[in-house]
Amino acid sequence: MVVAEIRVAVRFHAELARFAPHGSQRASAELPDGARAADLVARYPALAQRRIVIGVNGELATAETVLHDGDSVDLLTPMSGG
Image (cartoon, rainbow, N blue to C red; front, side, top):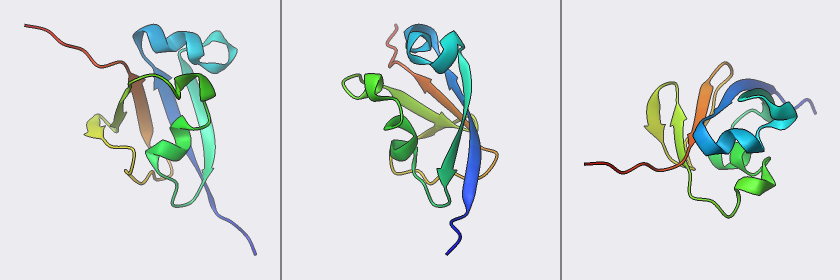
């Protein structure tokens, strides 16, 4: 049985950049078709204990958001302001 894969672009913002592979703020990831944002985040164990905000294609997403081939995923820390 052939499992289809998707490739997504990942960008680590602000302090999360230190968790990016190879010291770059950008990475790509191959995931099985039907993978969720949580599956992508799980690939980076250092993020497991951190609160993060996930964006997919410029829109706020949840851990349950299904990813598609070519998606752009942003990982950032929550911000507050006033």
